[in-house]
Each structure stands twice: as C-alpha cells, then as structure tokens.
Image 1 (cartoon, rainbow, N blue to C red):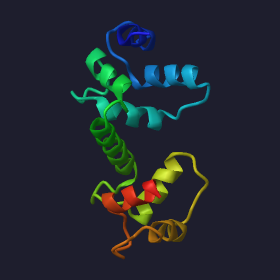
Image 2 (tube, helix red, strand yellow):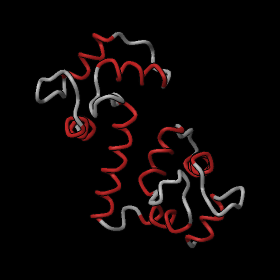
Image 3 (cartoon, rainbow, N blue to C red):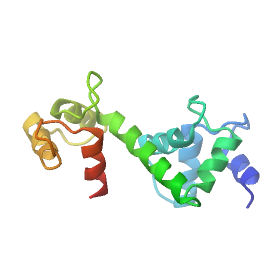
Image 4 (cartoon, one colour):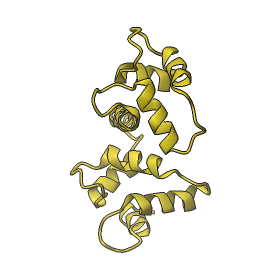
Length: 144
C-alpha cells in the first residue's frame, strides 16, 4: 500500500492531518491492542517537524519510513526518549525528581507510590548520585 493511501486511511476526518487520536485509533486497529494516548503522542511528536501536534502527509511519510535509515532511526529514538523524559521531568529543572516521578505515575493511573519508593527507583540509575535523573541517565535506564 502506498504512503498516500495509508495516510488517507489514518486521516479519518479528511482534513489532511493525522491527529494523536487518529494515529492511536489506527494503530489499535492495525496492532490489535490498546495504544496509550501518551505513547501515540510521543510517536507523533518525534516526526512532527512543524510542531503543530498533527502530522501532514510529508511528516507521516517520515514516520512510515522510520527504520529504513539507521541515522534517522537513531534520531527518532532520541526524540521519542526526549518526549518521554519530558513527561516525567520536573517543570522547574530538566531532571526527573522523586516528586515529579510520583506525580506523573499518579497521573498515568499507576498505584500510589510514596516519594521514598520513587527515590529508590531513581537511585538505581542515578549515576552521579545527585538524587535526580538527567536525560542521559534516563536514556541509560530505558536502554537497560
């Protein structure tokens, strides 16, 4: 199936753009399983060149081509990791603190964890011992 026809199948409302909800719905239909909205948003953001929160056909083509070029794949992975990191990072500092981890896990519906439990989770990958996760530490954790 050519990219334009795949794009049309994803663009359910025909507005020439694929939204997070359209991407999520089509991924669910294709994969046969529930795809969390946050995951679909991270995937979309990784190729959303103009930053409008939607994929036009050119951006969608880049998503469809992901993995065909090793360099592009590494860039997409890094952007996806950066987006995921941003979900957990404190809005004040560019690090994941025990409090920001706890807040995000609560928002995502995870069972209620205490700050000490979150501190222990962070400690395993806190390479510089500052009690927080930098992006590089987060990347190491995600690749483990």
